Length: 217
Image (cartoon, rainbow, N blue to C red; front, side, top):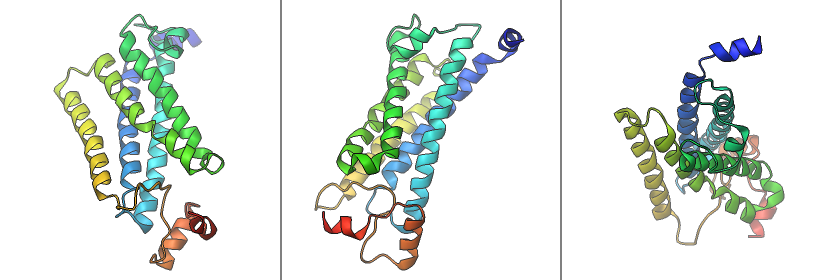
């Protein structure tokens, strides 16, 4: 019964769709993560961006797992567990596949460090979170090298658009950063000029920094 399901399951389409969807969701998550850390992002919009930043990143991770597991049971060009788990050991596109594996591990570290950010502290959380950039770059190259649809003009334009967008918003955030130095934010920032409504919105998501911690900066 299980073999019959595998034989008639459209594994190739599942691999393609889950891979492309995972990449687009990761792009959205990284883009929103950068955008919500900008100085102009405050209050409710900042909290909404942070919420969807988290959701899209986890959805990308889930689809990445689906993508990898389907590669194992694919009846056209199956991968072994060794090829999936150990980077650069695949017989087909070893570089591209290896980058995909490393990006998956990197994304797992980013997600786990975000859940443990209160225990890790802001400094270590920030260091782990910076892996988001090589993770995104690795998946971009992975898709361009190994994707069966990467030769299509629409897919090429998508890769160019997403790559340029991440570079552009990163540069823009750097230019808009205040002169007092880099600012590490997790969700909405609490400031003295913030309205009570924005304070309650931030506290509802548990993202506001306690006043005692602000004074210790």
